[in-house]
Length: 337
Ligand SMILES: [Mn+2]
Figure (cartoon, rainbow, N blue to C red):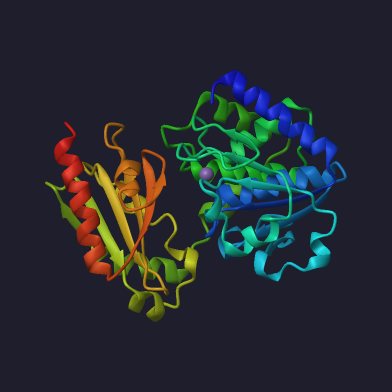
C-alpha cells in the first residue's frame, strides 16, 4: 500500500473506532509476542476510551506472555459465551496473514454475523481479506502499526497498552536487531520510554525467564543439528517423542530457530516440528536478502515474510524434512549467492 493509501485506510479505521461501541479483537493461532501484544495494545486502548472490548485467541495466551498486565482479559475463543458477544459489532484481526490463520473458533465468532472486518497486519502475503485493511509490509511489527495509528489519531495509549506494544515490537524485531528495524521503530521506543515505559523490566520479563524444559529441548535439538549445502543451510527437527518426554508446552519451541540462524556462514535456517495431529510445522529464516524463504514456503502452501516464513506439511517428519530441504537447496542453486 502507498503512503496515501495507508493514511486513508488509517483514517477510515479510526472512524470505525469512533462510530462503534463493541469490538472483537484477535490474532493468529499459536500467538507470539506481536500477536498478543497487538491485541492487548489496541484492545486496552479502545477500552480506555470507553469501548466494549472482547479480546480472544484461538490458543489462549502462552505462558511466556502471561506477565503482560491484563493479559488474563484475552480469552480462549472456544470459551466465549453468547453474552460476551452481545453488543460486539466489529471484528479486528491483527498480525494475521490470512483469515483462516485466526483459527476455527475465532472465525466462528464473527463470520456470517454481518460484522465489518478490520485487518491490521505487516505480512507481505496478506491478501487484504478485511473490509478495511491497514497492511504495511515495511513495518517490522503489527504492534508498530498499532502504536502509530493510535498516536497519529490522538488516541491515548495507556501504560498496559504501551507495555504490550513494546513487547510486540521488541519480539518481532529480535530485540531491535533484525534489518526490518527502522529509525521510526527506535523513535517509537524512545517515545515509549519518555512516557514511562520500563524498558529494562519489560525486556527482562520477555527474554530472561526460560523454563528449564526449554533448555533441555535445546540440548536435544543440538544433538540433531544438520548442516547441508556447504554449511549454508542449518536445520534440526523435533519429533513428537521428544515433545512428550520433556512435557513441552506448544510455545516452548518458539524462537529456538535463532540459535541455528546465528551460525556464521549459514544463509538459511529451518526448524521441523512434528505436531500432535501428525502435521509437520516448518519454520524458516533467511539471513540474505537475495534468498526469499517465503517463496519456498509458498510451494508448500505456506507464507510469511521474505526473511522469515513458515509452512505446514503432511508427515512423516523425515520425509517432509527431505522434501523441504530439497526445495531450499534447489532455490539456493538457482540464486547467485
Ligand atoms: Mn508480526
